[in-house]
Length: 520
Image (cartoon, rainbow, N blue to C red; front, side):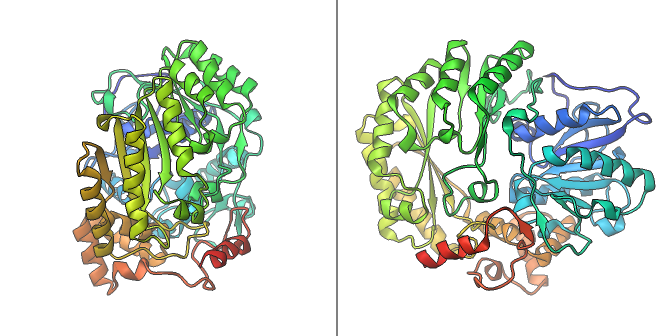
């Protein structure tokens, strides 16, 4: 992959001088280059004089080569994957197989395989026989321990030493450790922020880059909202934010070394930032363009709309999740229809006329009236003055996530989900020229399997090495295993031991069960 980028780190004497660390994003380049974790870890590792870090992205059925030097993946001492999406697990198998690296850790001494990211913290068990070490939680508090561990491991050519067993965030899957406590960086102000960021300048699909050519500014971690279905809000607690003065310093440093005129704010709970308006105004007054994540409608007022317009924002994204106020209350997203409509009007008043809305189907207790409510809410948004061509709708399948109050819930069978999609597709597009997309319910089943999977799921993943990673291949593997996808998508017993229960994410299970019992 020959891509012209700025701020690439290139160290000489590749073969002998450095410990060679492959930083892998198991999806395509245009998705991974906009991931802040890649930018952060790339800088952190390359700051160490003993390490050389190069990046890899997924290319189907191709030998993985590093972006920096086109060096094969198998020539690296350490391979680190960031796990952002469960369906990317299939790409990990593909990348290792195409690199001719033994997939199972028991068949491998080198390279050392490490994984981190939200899906590692969620439930690493489906991948436990592949990776030598999982980092559960934030990397910054244990980064020095990780570097020391890698050096010791490679020096001794042995399995992990016992002195690392009790470090928070270190999970060695071949050892029997009762509880692993996640790591949390408590003060974002004092934590490292990537300043010189790798940005593509000649990428042929530039218009399809996740966030375009932009500088990523991490403002928050965690989310105060704690929607009952949301992984980030529960496992990435507590909510933390960088102060406005610190963010000004970071923005000033970034624009002084990056010839880019666009800032992308990063943070799932961005609407809760106490100084969000000040941040946006600061960017606008610098004459920069802005990108921002999905915003809460109940926190979107005219002053924020004006600031975003001044920062040349062209589109606002809201996530009502459902058209039903009843169902919003049940999932703990207490936003009223009037909040959504007022936010739309606030944006229109200041010249922002394009909107993207995220909805979710198959949520617990959902009924036909809730589906109709989605269509009614869309109609009411149109009545506010939004043109059909300026409205984009994305409808996704509910996926039960570990560490959330909905972790035990089942998902509907394929026929029921398909019927819901057919109904919405017909009703939304009837008399409306609106862009609407639906996530594939078949892949939603697989995502649920990987999200809540056990060691059987790991075996299935390993078998895709020979069978392939399409739906037909997965069905054939399941048939050989004498199991069905429905066995993994059913409701879980609230009293049973779950594969991920050994992870302490800072939430007492009693809180989750209390919410569950109150609702159901």
